[in-house]
Length: 463
Image 1 (cartoon, helix red, strand yellow):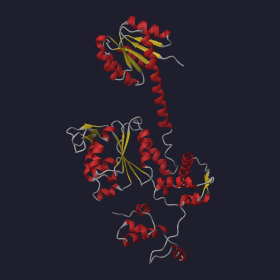
Image 2 (cartoon, rainbow, N blue to C red):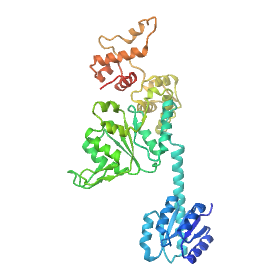
Image 3 (cartoon, rainbow, N blue to C red):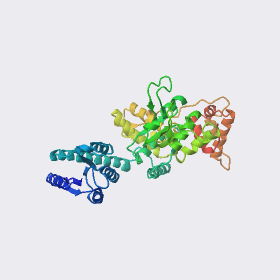
Image 4 (cartoon, rainbow, N blue to C red):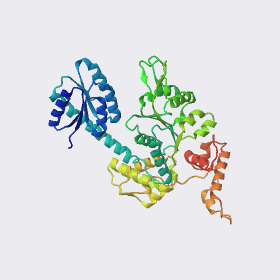
């Protein structure tokens, strides 16, 4: 192991040399600086593991030098040396990041023990920083599985955002179950704030009155049960990330206060009289079409534009091609480990069904299907029967033409535009249902989510 490097900053030359000689005998490489200017010159060349720093220095004070050292490298341990009369300065130094302080006249054996502890602590911090950096930078996307073009573009965008010093608000859109929360957490892990808080709140879970208290906190006596003050989630996330899941479901009365918090970084607790400034990176997510919600006066235009400075649109699972089997294999391995199974593969018929199924619940639904199949499987391969996705016979509504009869009709000589035909069926179902999406979906034997996908695909408006 390489010897630790020590810088002694003290204008008492006799004491400084005594410390240097003693610590050199203990295996440290030591240098002396009699003032802050020389210490700063040595800092870059020496790159010390530890600094012994006198509080009272000529010129630039020990406290100011401590700040400069921490700006240079926060992992350098600093032990402050102080006379009894300047003990308050030592306490201030500890508050500013000094490892500890020792009073003069110093006991060299005590000094050595303190130095050993400080260097060990510094080494552990650097190890932690290394592993955290490795996990964040080298393995950041281990949870985002897929190779389709859309996923590749999303990963590239996350990398670009992570390189920003202070990213603006980010809006993640996509159907329910497409992985919006995973992308939000990946953005946090990739960011410069990876070691800080990641606070998540589901905007559909609480009514507006309770949501305000959760987001902004409240003062004692603000309402009947407010027996003591409580900080809100914006304050809890200060310096880190706040993830607003399903922000499109936020009630209008709260949206104005949310806009101010996002735009100005200022919040006020419920029942409070003063503003509080917070430094929070905002990531919001929604399955709703917020542009449509704005036109319908259900979402504030100014809040939408503020949240959507950067947007990441997640594709539905049915549009991701071979990613479906990649994800299915990943879930298979996960649930094998969870339930102690040894299922080695998905058979060909089951794989074909997985790729053809429309997945209205997206990745979340796929996860549940594979988990259930693993639980019931007794062999080494998953079959169609265990997936429980085999299309079931459907009764034909009165007046409707059975699918079998449709298949018997000859195609016109010039062929048929399948996309236009499908669009016309969707339009007809909407017309016959009076615009009711649930009824229209039933007429077409589709889930509501699948119908929503068709509407978006064909550019059809819906209330």
